[in-house]
Image 1 (tube, one colour):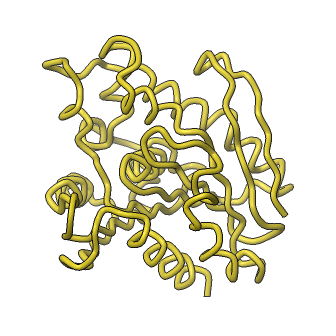
Image 2 (cartoon, rainbow, N blue to C red):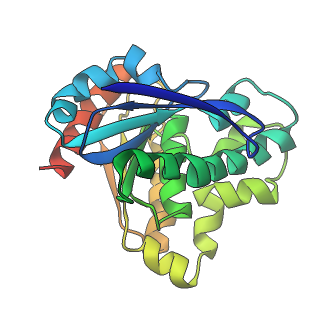
Length: 242
């Protein structure tokens, strides 16, 4: 039950692809790692390990090109352009990908978000930015302080709007009330190339705002690698859809 759709978006000023595996169940949008495309999760065998849940009709997996992650990873354009693209990418997801998922599901079901590395950043960000449509996220081995990788002393307004570390502390009113009804799971290893401090940084910001979040450190034997993520995602999604 694999499908793929590509279209040009004026929001990101380029064509991008959305993929789907499954026929029914909870819709889950999986963000690729930095520079990854909509089919990365199949090439890296994540779809394979999720297949029992997919075949049982418990989940319906979607993925999209990592437009925001790619410009960051490849250092495309100026720092200001790369920061602006994070916001544009999220707007594309909210206003184009979400309606496409709802149309495919024939229902405006709440969507879950998931991802690893920079994909974890986007998974957490879309729940925090758009809690009206995204109700839960699984962020694995996340990189949340993206300013560490850019040659600019300060974030732009567009990037502040896209990064939970910057905008969550300033949320008020209905947006914050709605976000406090959502759940963000933050899973990480402590092995090679992992940075547990990044995960705690996000957890602390969410906790200070009263947003439900769950930090799970799997320990030093789990590395920043697809081996780890192929264990994490089936575990969490399996538990959540029982």
